[in-house]
Image (cartoon, rainbow, N blue to C red; front, side, top):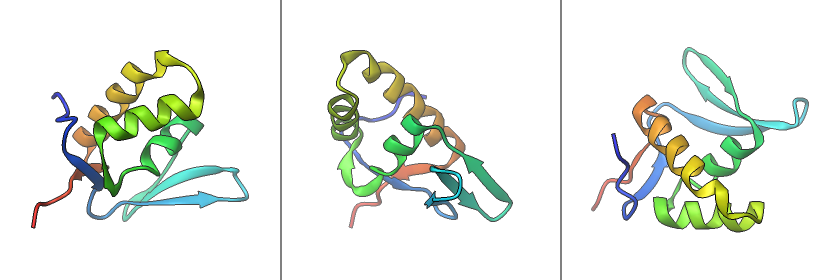
Length: 93
């Protein structure tokens, strides 16, 4: 499934991103458990706050990491996260 990069994305219902100081990483919380995220996954998901398009998130991550080869990895991760329901398109009002 290809992500529509021009639409605003947000966390999916039932999922909450949280920084865990003891683990020094972001985790994704949901009713059935928790997903421990690596640094790049946390950087991507923390930007899925309902204020940015997928393209804007990709460009921000590219800038934050300082190299160009993260663009496709960011898109791939966001497509996977969308497929898992971790993120969704922000409903239009």
